[in-house]
Every structure is written in C-alpha cells, then in structure tokens.
Image 1 (tube, rainbow, N blue to C red):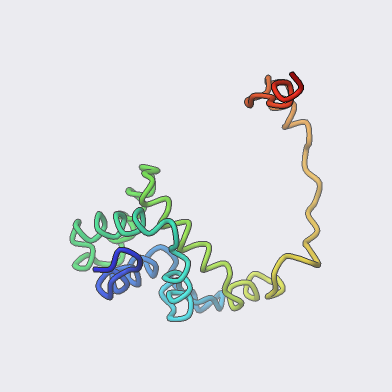
Image 2: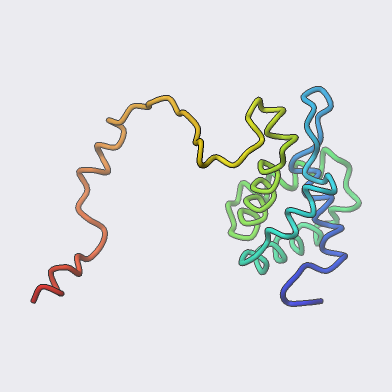
Length: 150
C-alpha cells in the first residue's frame, strides 16, 4: 500500500461508501457519488486528508460494510457521521466536495456548470444582526503591530 495514494482495495471500498452516502436519483437526474467520473475526482481530491480518509475507510469496512444491505449501510454511515470524528468528517468533506463539482449535479440543481468566479453568484442579504455577538467579543488574536512599534 502506497503512503501517498489509496490502494485499489481502498478505492473499491470508497466506491461503495460514496454510493451509500450519496446515491443516484433518476427522478432528480443526478448521479451517485460512486459514478466513475465523480469517484475519480474523489480519489484525486483526497490530498492532505489521505490519512483520515484511509482511517475512515478502514473503520467502515471493519464493520462488515460489504456484507450489509443498503439500509444497514446507511445506518452505519449515519451513526459514524453523527460521532463527528475527524476521519468520517474528512471522508464526507472529500466526497461531497467532488460531488458538487460535477457538472451534471450542478445542472440538476439549476446552477450553471461553471466556477463561481469571475462572474460570482448573487446571494440574498441575510440578517447581519446575527453577527452582533461575535462583534462584541474581545479579539482572539495577539496584535503584533504593537510589538513591532516598540
């Protein structure tokens, strides 16, 4: 097993896990995260999260994931994700990041299949008063400018 990429066995397990986390939906016209193009993007995107993703895959497969039916697979994934443990959160982030980069998914969501910039997207203004509590907090960082002025 290479330390800088997923093994074929890990990719096969990842395909099953991704397809469970985000299944295809013919009604909505969206592929699942186990789609070959999306899976390839997931594998390419692992990057610095490789140790955590590898650990999540190991933890999931250790629970006889391959032998479970779809409903039990979903329960297992949901329970693990509910723990908010770093490995499963990293795995979810990598899978969802690649999934929502897929043009077919963006088009099904009625979004232009393009990068957000340079055109950007228009967002409705929210309630800025929600930030009042943050604004009232003291600074969380040290002001090094004072030290440099001495």
